[in-house]
Image 1 (cartoon, rainbow, N blue to C red):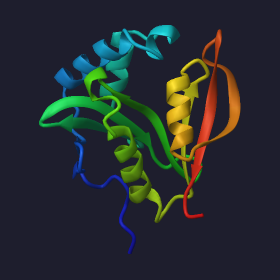
Image 2: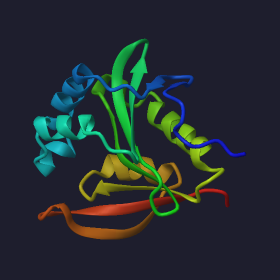
Image 3: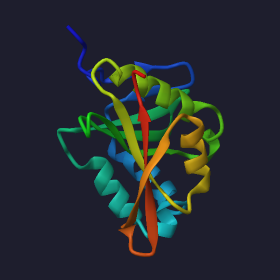
Image 4: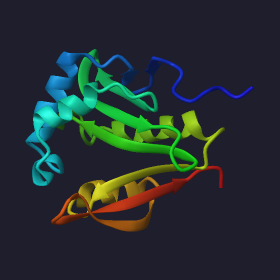
Length: 166
């Protein structure tokens, strides 16, 4: 019998630990930091909107606090199942934790977690967020299409897909 993805509430990886218990304190810290940085700043996403998203209960949305040395470093929010795979709704790291390989490790974990039951990992990134687009393309994601004005009428979102089990 195959294990159900995202059934564990705590996962220890090499560079970080993931915990599915997102506290109000974590949500406030992350939403306040993200709201003043891109892409959220350019898209006009408020700290209160981000906080509400992080705390909203939803059965098919799995939220993990990313911790490094027991300090909150970021969050990964995953919708599963979604188009025969997992959809990364939000992967955000606080500034001091970027560029340390944590994002790469999170994507590797996500692939291992889902590949026995899914064919894809999906996400969207804002067209102006070149650093994110380059990172995901370097991780094997390919552009599937452009979603015009999805989040904000002035900006397009790029739909990306990483095929699994090929």
